[in-house]
Amino acid sequence: MNLKVIITGATGMVGEGVLHECLQHPDVSQVLVVGRKPSGKSHAKLTEIVHRDFQDLSPVADQFTGYDACFFCLGVTSIGLKEPAYHKLTYDLTLHFAAAMIIHNPNSVFIYVSGAGTDSTEAGKTMWARVKGKTENALMRLPFKKTYMFRPGYMQPTNGLTNSLKAYKFLGWTYPLLRKMFPNSVSTLKEVGLAMINAVIQLPPKSILEVKDIVALASSVTH
Image (cartoon, rainbow, N blue to C red; front, side, top):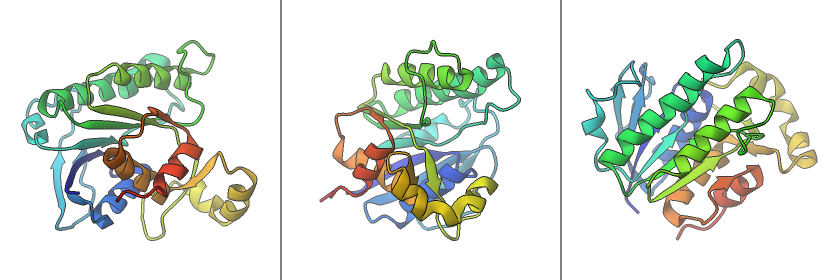
């Protein structure tokens, strides 16, 4: 394989972990990171665009051409945000980026990092879950080659990376127990990254991937 992928959110925990797996993977030849601030990473496979306004991608969108997939790992917490603000930073921003991908890479795969508990009905009581569900549903209606909604739960951080959330660092020692007790809710960040790469290679039929699906896809044979 000779995969060329775009990654957003590389300065966050998930994006950094996915970027790490892509840079190490033999089937990934090029990685374009698009972020609002520098990732701080350097690698022969890596190209980076720093662009602060994701609502106006026109100055940089031409550089999206020629890629096989987008791993959209950019996201914000809903804590402290009212629904209109969270909607703008989640639904609007994601769909705007996806629209640019469609124009420049209509035959690409788009993978969106959502979360366990996302509400596909868009009608539940939990605000973030409704907005994430609306975002997922809208993405799956776009004419990409394939779209995948990743719904990770607890993710054990990858050793040596710097953007792990404090809560994950604090709970890290409990990972073996959590994995044993809650196998359908716990994965490693490495598994999330590998599952994304395998999704692009294998094009599995299921569009919404829960934790157990992510774990299974991460270990599936790609050759």
